[in-house]
Length: 150
Image 1 (tube, rainbow, N blue to C red):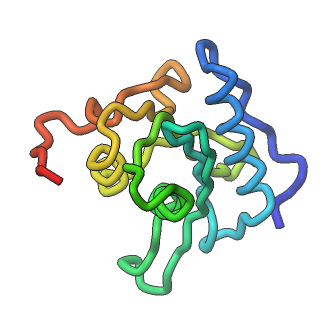
Image 2: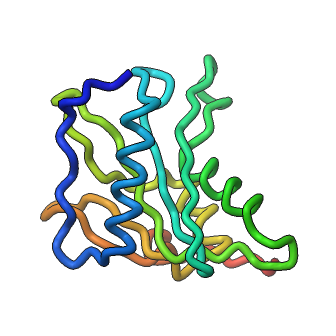
């Protein structure tokens, strides 16, 4: 279990109330399940219909078997939608705990950037830049991405 003294990420300037809820949900989830080397990232995302879905990173004994929190959250969102509805994501926030017992907003890995942008190229992704947390469009995280017809 995580130390309850872990410092929360302050709501970044310009973050909407709806995105701040995602930040809180991701921190709450990681605060409940964090285990060093096993469950180190949590994600909360909001779908176009307003649903909020979460996921936690699952580390495997061989790195290739690991599953990112963003993929777990996307799968939960797909499962929670009407089968005829497309998986459209409005916003994604992922957090991790650093050794200094502080949550921080992190960017999705390259594979998760691809996955999110495949389904929702205009999704807002929160990540920590040089000046602090910023919001970027999913497709802007992958310049010159090859677009596949679904």
